[in-house]
Structure formats: C-alpha cells, structure tokens
Length: 428
Ligand SMILES: [Zn+2]
Image (cartoon, rainbow, N blue to C red; front, side, top):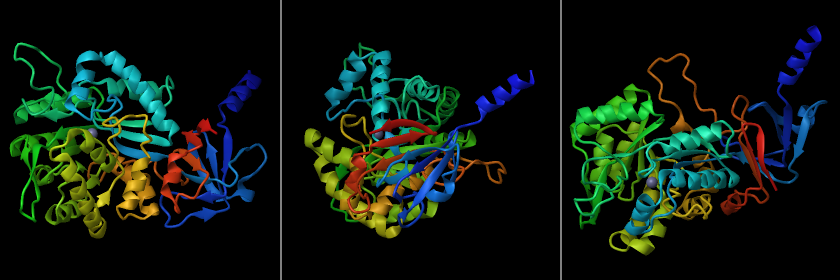
C-alpha cells in the first residue's frame, strides 16, 4: 500500500526540462541576453538563469545550440473560421456553401498552422457566421484533441440589422448572417449575456461601415456609425459587468470616435486614426491592432477606397509610435489565407518605423497585457498575464529561431522549435 502510494507520488511529479539556447529575448527586457537557460516544470517556467547552474541531475536537457529563444508569439486578431475573403464573393461562398462543421474542420488546420508558426496564443475576433464554433475549437485544443494555440474567443460579433453581410440577396431568401444581428440596448445586453454564456472571452462589434475620404486634414477618413450611443453604452457596460473586454472594428474617424466614447478596450484596424483620437486612446489606455498586411492584401482585390487607406494607415502608424499608443500585434489572418505566415506583419511594422524589439514586444508582452482578464476594482486575487514573457511563474510557451530577429525580424517567419505549456509541439 505504501509502495503504491510512493509510485503514484513519483508518477505525479512533473518532469523538469531545461531549455538551453545561446540567446534569450524574454519579451520584457530591452536587449537580448546570452548564456541563459529556462527551467520548465510541468506547464510552467520555474527559473531563468545561467545554464550551468540550472543543469542538475534528473533534469532533461533540450539544447537548441546557437538559437534565439523567445516567448511564444501572440496574434491578437485572427479568424480561424475564415479562409481569406478578398472579395464579398469569397466571403459569401464560405457562408453559403460550407457547413459550420466543415468550417470547423478547416479551422482545426488553421490553428495547427498558427501554433507551428510559433503563435502559442491568439485572440480570435469572431466566427463570421459560424456561431460558437470557435469555442469548440478552443475546447478541442485545451483537451489535447488537436494542436493549437491558447485561444481567447469572441464567438459572434455584433452589428445592427442591415449593416453587415450577407446582403444583396432576395428578401425571399433566408441567408446566413456573418454576425449576431442586434438592435436596441436591451437586446444588446441579452446578446452579450448569451455570448458569455456560450463561452465568449471577448465581445466584438462592428463600429462602422461605408468608409469615405474627405479634404478635411483633421478627419481625412470618415464613416457611417453602426450602433447608436445608448446601444454601445449598453454593450460595453454589460460586457464589463460580466468581466469581458470589448473589441471594436473601427476603420474611420466616426467609428473610432463612437467606440472610444463607449470606452471599448481595443480598436481594430483604425486606418483613419487621427491625432485627436490617438490622444484619447493614450488617455483611456486603449490598444490598437493595426492589421496592416490584410489591408494591403485586400486593397489589390477590392479597389475603391481600400488602396487609399493603406498610406493613411502608414501615416497613422508613424504618429502612433510618436504618441506612445499601445500597438498590439494583430494580423486579421483568416481575412487572408492561413497558408501565409501570420508573422510577416512583424516586418511591415518594422518597415513602418518600429524597432524589431518593439515589434517583438507588441507580439508578446504587449499583446499579453491586452489579453489579461478584466478584474473588478480592488480584486485581491486577480490573476495577471500568464503568457508573453519568459519569466518564472509564466506558462512555458517558448519558440526558437536560427537567425537574430533583432537584426532582421523576418527571422520569426522561420520558427523551428515550439513549446506550449511545457509540451514540445515542433522541433526542427
Ligand atoms: Zn478581422
């Protein structure tokens, strides 16, 4: 009996693994550090220190040689249930001709791609008509059924009647909706409660549509706002009351203004950001997910206002860097094909003026701070971020690359080692 207990105790002791690499970028520090190793026990990091000190008997060693070790990357804007929609026809095709189970199967391939490319956490910003299937994908990953990143999901985004696809079909047809259609503050409160009930970690809505250019240098990109002020107030209030943050798709001045007035937590896309809006974002500590590459990609296929928004966003990005807006890595992958590595946005951010280290932080510790749970004021036991940094107590989510990403950040498009929660998912 005693022997059996001992055996059980032994079996339950988590394995200790030492991950060694020549260089460490920890997600927080301003510079890389050499000669350190990361001691992992179970799914957590327990120590970061000199390799020689941590390499003791009974510890399994993973030696990555001359590699650069980093925290797992975080993409704060994805769509695992979408497979590229450069045109409205691409989008409609997926909603009309693919069942939700089929789309979920494709999503299981998307999440595998994400984690194998080094993205160990994602915030998935709506299922585009696939109801709550993101919750199912998240559950399958969490239970070890399929490999994938940690998922923060928003289930169905919200828009009022007639303000989001599918549209343009005969009124005699009942076509799928790309979002949860909601009108009026009470219905919106109920919708928030329903989404949270079925597993939403975040609430997302579409703040604007019909983007147009003006000659006003203060407000060069305008738009039509979707929700009324009382509707948005109800949405954000109810979400925050239930401990959920709110993400606003907001492209142009009017949509961003409405979202900031309602006190959202993140602005998605934000191509038309101006000085006054950025000042409000800094004051309110609102994050910006610029999703630059998807804008460049869809501009080619969509035409119209879309190509004009690319240089506008580039200008906004430069201003945001100067003003200290919290720029959070978000790609909108799924809006473009999952076959393209979602790490390529890093190079664009650097081309737009960010240092490689700032771009890496944007995709690690900065993104992690956005994903932190919303805590009640004075909550004593509020758990902060568990990801985005290589430090004791954090999840053992680690990646490695061969070349120095601080010299050329595109090195992060070639991740050859992925550990998530202490489990090695990729090794060469
Ligand atoms: Zn999106």
